[in-house]
Image (cartoon, rainbow, N blue to C red; front, top):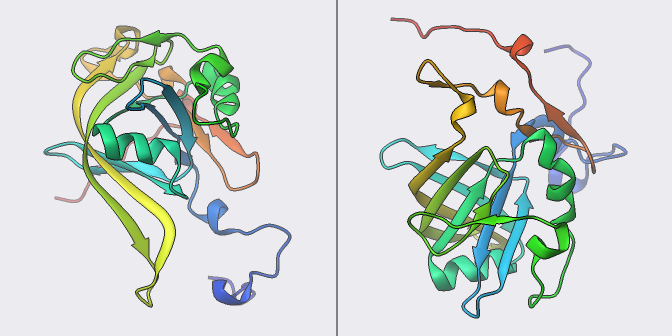
Length: 206
């Protein structure tokens, strides 16, 4: 590391124009999560803190800052879908980040068509090139190092069904770049995309 480094303690502020934390841990896949309430209202919202956490069984998770409708719906029904945000869906994804009343559906607000899931009772985004149907495994309220609870909820789900558009399967391998996934950056509105030119291969040491 350069001898000229910017150091700060998060508890005392970062001293920059914008908090760099999100930009340091980036870019990140977007957790575009669809759920259904007990009364049947469909919900879909994007989450910046999202990733995969286990192979067998496959487990994915996201963190919600605040106990939002998405978390409530998953807590009550035990089901959700992750929908891949491709380049063609980025505007609709952004629309679903709007703060709507609980009795309004972001699907309708963003003009998104739904597709029935195979295993669970939560629909997914019809235009998404890849969808993971999930059942809740854990919902955890996070704590700081001091043990105090914070208003952030970690939701983990086991993947029980996978949808992949066959246009993106080549010689039996899913082509990540071909699906044109959009990734979340660190600024208030920063996103990134990827293409095949950015791909390289490096094997683990034997």
